[in-house]
Image 1 (cartoon, rainbow, N blue to C red):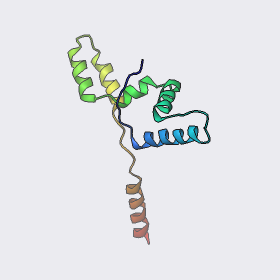
Image 2 (cartoon, rainbow, N blue to C red):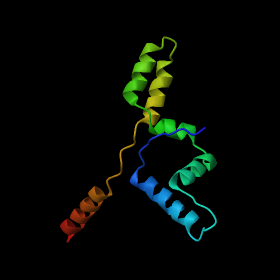
Image 3 (spheres, helix red, strand yellow):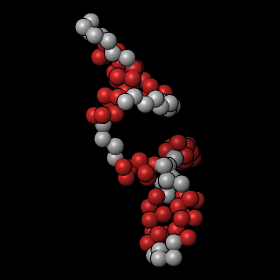
Image 4 (tube, helix red, strand yellow):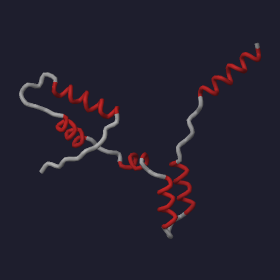
Length: 108
């Protein structure tokens, strides 16, 4: 049974699919392979890190709503969990570099 499904690939993912397609079809003259074959094989042989994917796609607002409706929730544990999930601010290396340059100029 064949099912058709439509999905969108990011540029990075499309590049991987195209590179794999080129690799498997190069010098292959005894049959035919199409993009669907490549993607099916990639899906069959891959393992998804469920927790990582869920973490990437968690909506904090929705999480708060779900937790607010649950009467048995431990709020301290929930707040701790949300703090762990909160994205960490990126270190601004250019700001540190500018400050270092400004200090070295003022000492000269």
